[in-house]
Image 1 (spheres, rainbow, N blue to C red):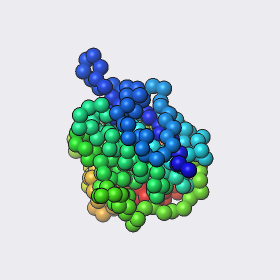
Image 2 (image 1 turned 90 degrees about the horizontal axis):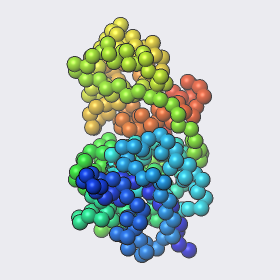
Image 3 (image 1 turned 180 degrees about the horizontal axis):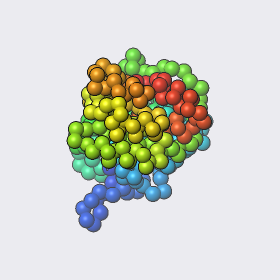
Image 4 (image 1 turned 135 degrees about the vertical axis):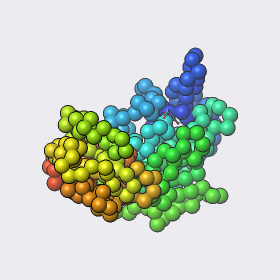
Length: 330
Ligand code: ASP
């Protein structure tokens, strides 16, 4: 019997065409399908669901993460895998959000897209789409993942690194799950095998703040933003392995302390992650009870925080969830 795969088309460059002014805008599902006649030969039974309004992924956010995750959970028993066609700009955010929303998956959920529209010469869209379908069909990676240009990445370890070239994504702190080299080569060491119960979270409402630490930042202004913010959690993007230019008692320290919400630290470095307290200039983070994001990406930190705050009713549960490796993000 043929495997059934649900394809969710959200928009993105893969299906875009140029409008009258010469800017790329999302276009119909039919536009994609006519350029991939090979779909008939994939040996799978495809069902395609298209967003009513197709989106450049700049417009994809919490409401769309939930629309995708609900589509998957409502159809979970009827399909053996799911492939999501998505713009590349925020694909890492959506993949991270889905990783934390859909716990205990025993089926693949693979996101892909392209740098060049599928109707243009030299497109990477056809290969990416067909390879994502093949990975989904093989069914060995039962988690959320991104297939892009010959590599499969853990959904919450990946970041967009290139806005032009075909290798648009990388997971600098984590090994790839698979790569293409005359057939798929799976890297079993990189699979995250923590068995969790199948819990599909269905809420995503909490606001969080992303605080960028940089030389010359106006700390009083940052403090005022924090004070007036309705956010229930903060991701603080710090220097190097975890240093910041403020001390206990400074205006920014006081604002963070008084806010009394969970704070996760992520590193601005692409590689290496966080080691809170390694330097004196970072030990202040300990006084703020900042959670070390370890090797987490900013995309995973933000979405993990949002999912935790939206779905747990006590601060203890939120903090436990945030401090624990859930999907290989640390
Ligand atoms: N702006 C596009 C998007 O993210 C870029 C892409 O798909 O590559 O939807």
